Image 1 (cartoon, rainbow, N blue to C red):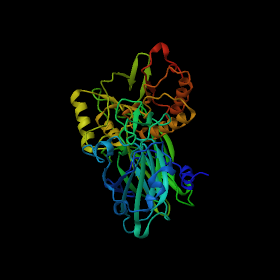
Image 2: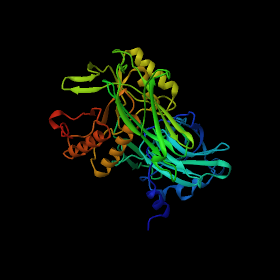
Image 3: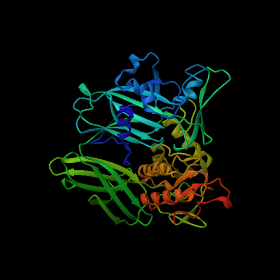
Image 4: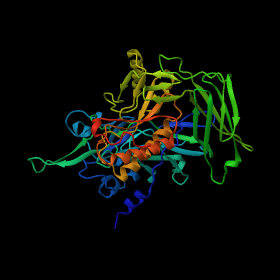
Length: 491
C-alpha cells in the first residue's frame, strides 16, 4: 500500500503561470518574499525523489518552525542557488555545492490588515522539483526550473491574524526522465563506510539548484485579469485576447473589458480604444520595433481595464509590446521585411556567489556588456532567462531566441514528451508578448540521430505552432547532417 502522503502528493497538480508578469498598480499589490529564508539540507540522497524516504516529509517538517526546532537549520538568501553559499570542505562547503537530494526552505509572513480579494504565491523559478506548503497545507508542486509557477491561498489555508508559514521542499535529482537529463548514482570507495552520490548532467554547465528567482505574494481582485495575449504585426495589424480568473459565482458576462493603446511612456498619445475580451484592428503609421542598429525599438502600452457595472473598476493591467514581423526564407531571417544578421551569443545567467540566482545588477551589467561589444542578439542557452531580462531586451532592442531547458536530450519517451510539451507551453505563455523574442528553440544538441527523435520533435513542433503560429521554431544540433533524423519533421 503506498504511503498516504505519497498518494496526496501525487494527486496535487502544478500550477503554471498564464503569462502575466507581476504588477503593482491601482488594483494590485505585491509583497516581496525575497531575503533570508530558513534552510535545512537533508542527507545526500541515494535514490530518486521518493516521498516516503524523505526525512522532511516523514517527520512533517512543513508543520514545524524549522528555525527553532531543527538544530542544523541555517539561512539561505532567496533568490540564489544554494550551491555557491558554503565555504571550505565541511558540511557547509563542498558538500553543499555537490549536494543531491532534498533541501527545505521556510519563512514566515503576515498578510497586512484588511487583506481582501485573492492571494497568490508566485515563484519565478525553482530548480528542479518543488513542493509548496503554506501553514502545513500542501498547495501544489512544479517540475522543472527556469519557468514561473504559482499557487493560490484559499481562506482555510490562511492562519490566525494572517500568519503564513511558507515551506518549500526542493529536489535536484537528475535522471533520463528529467528535463534537462542526467545520471545520478551512488558511488562506492575502498572505504566501506564512505560512499557518495554523484550527479552527472548531460550538459556542460553546472546544475545550480534552489529558489533561483523572486518569490512574491500577489494581492489580486476577486475577479482578475489572468491572461493577455497581444499580436502586433509590422503592417499595423493588432489583435488581443483577454482571459479572466473569475470569482466564485461570477460569469464573464458580468464584466466589461475596455482596452486602450498608447505610445509607451506617453499616456496622452492614445492610438486605439476598444472593448471586448478579444478584438482585432489595423492601425496606420505605427512606429515599428527594430533590432539594435536597424532603427528605434519603439514600444507601445496596452492598458486593459476590467469594469463591473456595480463596482466600477475591478482590475487593471498594463503590458508593453511592439509592432514587428518576423519571416524566414532559405536565405535568412527578416524583421519587418529587412534582412537581419544576428551578432551575439549563447549566454548563461551564472555568476559568482549567486549561481543562477536572479540579480538586478547582473542583468544590467550583462546588457551593458552586450551593448559595449556591439551585439544585437542572444540565445537563452540553455533555459529561459528571467522575465525581467526579456523586458529589458524589448527596451534595448536585443533580438532573443528563447530556449526551453531541454539540453542533451537522449531519451525520447512519451513521459519526456509530455513534460517537454508542458515546458514549451509555459515558455510561450510567459514570453509571447515580447517583440524581442523572434523564435523558440526546442532543444540544444539532442541525440537526434535516433529514429524515435523524428516523431518526438515533430509532435513538439506541432505543440509549439499551436501555441504560437507567428514565430519560427528551431533546434540547435550537434549531430552530423548525414545522421540527422529530425530535419524536415513536423510538417
